[in-house]
View 1 (cartoon, rainbow, N blue to C red):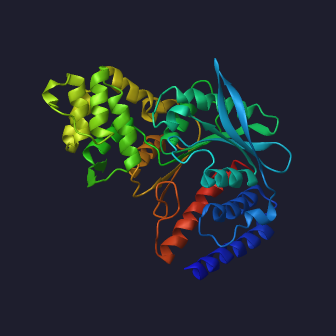
View 2 (view 1 turned 45 degrees about the horizontal axis):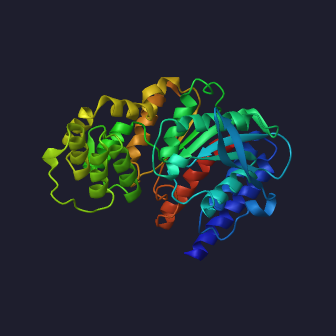
View 3 (view 1 turned 180 degrees about the horizontal axis):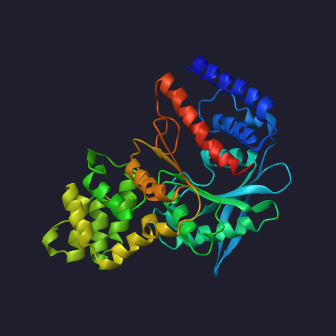
Length: 380
């Protein structure tokens, strides 16, 4: 497999050399070269990483930026060469690995070597697996800070995100404070409608148009969903009981679901496993304040306010967020234009580690190259 991988990589490098000679003086040609150099950088089994041969080591530093009465914190990656660069605020959302994860650093440095200033803001609530609408302010503040740097071209700054972070990147791009300044959004594996995601997790079904299929959500998705639902219950003693049952996996002596308040009963039923139809009915009966909260964290709610071009990536078999959520986002944006959608078999959620046959691998890498080419056009 490694020998075959090496042949593929050498083939890509040959294409890079031909493209560099033929198109290197044009903006599309330079973007293609950047994409060809970048892709091996993020593939874990790539035998060579040519980007490191030709481009200097980026800098990485912690920065702080104003968020009203507090400061936001993030990691800033800057290209080694001087000048003004395109920029991207990259939000990882609920990321258990943390800021020093080699994959995060490798991605930040890979994009910086491609000529982009990269700001990765860090969210304390997301680190605690809590999804809060106020984190849109974090992204708006990070975006404004990045645009204001002397090393950054303010006309070429976009937003990107993964999973929940992707959805919040769209929420920030819809925000009136920055929506006219966002150059692009890259949306990887996020959700379009938080209530639809809740229904999918509770029913263990993914659905798109008239198609309904069994779906087993990832443990992390289930935990974040469970915490979010339990926090909607008003009584502290009932929240503690539900945490004991569904987060700690411990039974409660003398527990009787009939003794719960109506809102706690709804949460208990949703967490106990229900059909798709029952999940929809129960979700519709949740307290108005909770459903309003779901609307606040759903890109769908203000999708008409999104002005920027959007590039959508999704793992077809994603166990954290069904790919159907990305499809519904693409469907909503297609009438206005400015959307590019790619679905992958190579990725396992965010990581390009799923085993596929050599022909499928070549096809998947080609799709990734085309997608990254479109992103690199903004950085060239």
